[in-house]
Amino acid sequence: MRRFFVIAIAAVGLSLTAGAQDMYYAEMLSRNHYYGTARSMGLGNAMTALGGDLGSVTINPAGSAVSPYSQFTITPGLLFSSTGASYAPDGSENFGSPLKTDHTKFNMPNIGLSFTYFNGPASWVKSVSMGFVANTTNSYLNYTTGQGSNSSTSFLGSLASGARGLDYNSLPRDLHAAYNANQFGEYGPVGSNIYVGSNERLDPSEAYHYVPGALSQRAVYNTFGTKTDMAFNLAFNVQDVFYFGFNIGLPMIKYRRSETFGEAAQQPELFPTTFFVSDTQTETTNYVSSTNTYALNTDANGVYAKFGFIALPTDHLRIGAAIQTPTKFAVSERWAYSASSQYENSKFDGNSTSTVGEANYYLRTPYVVNAGIAYTLPGVGLFSIDYELTDYSVMKYSDAGDHFYDDSWASVNMVNRTFCGSSHSVRMGVEVKPLPFISLRAGYSLTTDPEKYWTDEKGNRVTAETVEFLGNSEAFKQQLISSRHFDNLTHGVSLGAGYSSPGSFFADFAVRMTSYPVSYYAPYYYGAYDAKDKNGVSLNIGAPLERLDKKMFDVLLTLGWRF
Image (cartoon, rainbow, N blue to C red; front, side, top):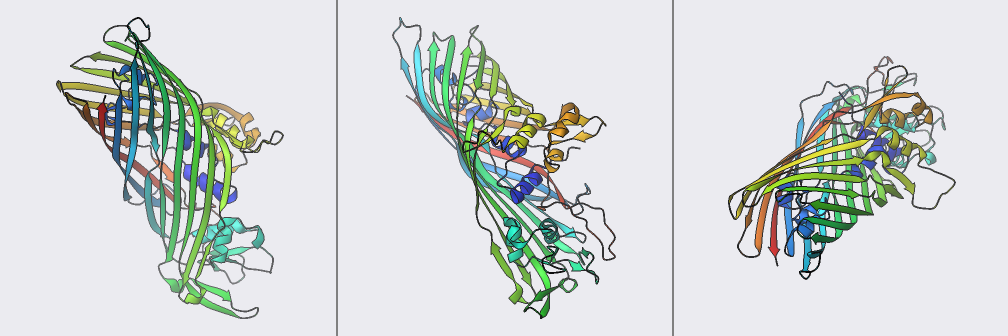
């Protein structure tokens, strides 16, 4: 089974460096999961060879020229995220019962306007279409909550382990906030920079520390936001047998992430914590609970170009293709940490918020190739199938400034090239017309995982997270022998219906369910540490791990007018 540590690696990277800039983060920002209009979504977005719908324009720019009229569409929608989180306190795959978290958001995945101008009968270009379309190309909605009981490790213990060897002024933002909130403290000689979590205990000789009782732990991981492509479109109709078009795309990304980890002593009397109230006097109280929160805001604006065509070799057969250049995003990030702790004696309670971290950089995302074929029977129905290729190996980070002699992104870009490859998508759609003014639709999509793993000269599996944690050394690349893609698949199933009035008005409705591969979330910022029991014996266990099973449900209603 694949251990998918996207979230874990991002959390570690954010604690120790600036932002979430790793391979998984670049992949997440790059990925397309098309929305568009209710008609295009109801057909599984198998629109490359069809066109005629403003939801198809971001897939194939030639699509707007297929319509023999100008049109305006607006598409409100609802998103339902449903995720089951199963918690394993010891990091094994012995997960508890899943806790389901549902969340709903209103969205506007499509708004578009196109104008069609007809030329004279002598012109080989029958008509020209110009327009503007804003189509959502991904949603980041995901709310999860996992919880369990842990008697072996603690989040505060992981923070203390991460701070080991650092003096107060050298602590990164997350540890600085935790220290100021009385979540861990130094023990041993002054200046030893050895720390212990406030819900751990020291043995009498101060040789080791351990968790003295059961902690109720709760990990909340929430994301939301969208990627929306604003496309300025120009397309041409050549005698109703060939259509071609161009887009200048201006995608915008708004991504928000919040991670909150809370733990509470089930028996506070087992968790005594000693505070210095003066240079020589101490006071002991019992630990009750603590909470740590990390918040990330990411905003990005990009630009790309796209060209596409649709050809009709026969009256009923249609073929289409499009190619999109890599997108260059200017990315801006802001993040901060907050921490709080509660004790039986409230005068030792602590609250702290870190300073705000900021990062600005560029990200180049993959090029995209679309191809499609469709068969239509006017007044009866149609069938369409699309193939899409996205090459994630070309993802590249670069500095916002001009650093010619210092490539600060060499390591992570090496990981991108080595451990990411091509993702393949197949989309299919069918439409039937039981009545001239009614259409019924169904669609299906399947997308493969772009991530690869390698085997080394000893036959061991090497993954991106292995290299991330071991320093991104080029030496790893020299030891890699052969690669294979992970077999994770994302599936989408959609149903829809449409009404077309004798006048200008039309309306479409669609629902879609997307099923994502199982993923894993490791909520401790600093992973596992050498956890010991009260006798000082190493437990040889990992930090908590969550198994996440996510589904997304979308409901769209498109209202449109022809003119």
